[in-house]
Image (cartoon, rainbow, N blue to C red; front, side, top):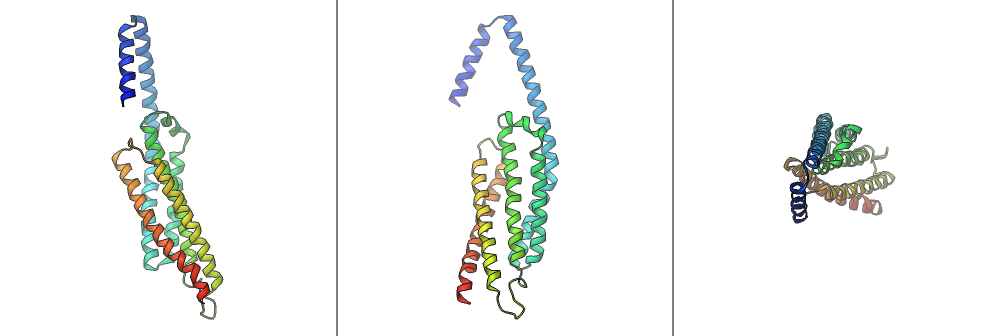
Length: 219
């Protein structure tokens, strides 16, 4: 803030001391720069509008999938989470489109675009392993034809849990990097919400992973 104020004072001082022709050139350059910023923000708005529907749908499906998984409806959870991954991928694609890139050169807009891309990208990254985990945790899959627990299936489930925990750790790290004081309040709130959900999910997967690792030795 102090550095920005100092630059502003120096710029104003230079403006006052410059000639009329120089002031005219500076004014025109500022108008051109302002126009370019408006174009960049307009293109960013297009990307955000394109990403909004699939992102909201992905969030709803992810929440539904996790609720179904916790209630034991793992087949439905796998379907919902797979759909959530597809929706998050669509949202990330819209935010990564070429017409959104100029906004990365605009202060404040760049931080918000980056956070949106992280939200969509990490949503897809987490939903994929979660869907695979739900499919692996299907009760019928974990039983052999004789009705006994299949230790090989339990070990496979353990590997899926490890993959899920890895994706959660990477997502939490990415969210931490995306946080910024320049984020608009609704987006900052979404980041905080997702971070809390990932922390809860990480604890649940850690507990399941411990059971899956120890269970084969007890059978």
